[in-house]
Image (cartoon, rainbow, N blue to C red; front, side, top):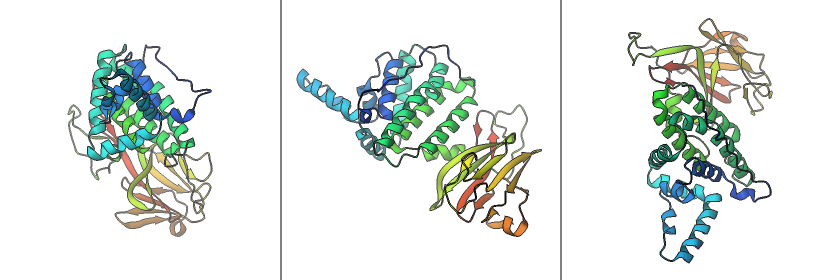
Length: 340
């Protein structure tokens, strides 16, 4: 799916001279949605999608209605929305998916662009301002936001969307909307969705006819590297796409593809190189070494076996300096969509 648009809707909302504390990710998101829907989906409507108390504005007394609207506006623009959205999610984990479907239906009815252009918009102009809002929230004290992880996750999500056929545009828009709701609330994408993108590669690829829409094939030029939180082995920390055309480096230097902060990891620790359909790990003279675990057994240790290169297999776990743990997997295409 090629993400292009003929619309001129590349809106950006200036906050110069205003209180940046109000200009959260949700504020920018809601302003873009209101503009796209030509006012049909305003802040109050968007807020009510997620099970909040926005509908209480509809009071018989116009004075109370106006005051309530002003209070709600402040809540929407402040970080109070995070608490409200989390409470809604705790009551119903499907709330973001449900809200995304409502939003998509209203946008498709009211926007002056088609569904493919809306997908493009969510992957470009909308993200630029939502990212700016998250930066404001981080500066305003929301310290749990890891902007580098967020940028990488969203970049991977957009790259996944671009690989999808145009026929899936409606589904993609719902996925994007739900992902935005989860991101703005928790500061990262829904790990159920992440695990779908970065699930474990099968040991064998099922055979199938080339014309079979369910046939599974492996992308020979791409692989996936997933980092796990050191204190939570089953928790995803971040993930990257590795392409054979570019050696993929890990280390503490800022020009590495993955910049490690652990002091035990060397400045240029190791790299992964694609070569003729094979993937090779090359330790670059690291002080504390690189290991590869396969089915729980150490099959390569740079301190014991030298700097390599060592041929990796999908499903291998890489451990750098005994501290940073990664999982190496393949990129699969199963007829309709790509998955890592």
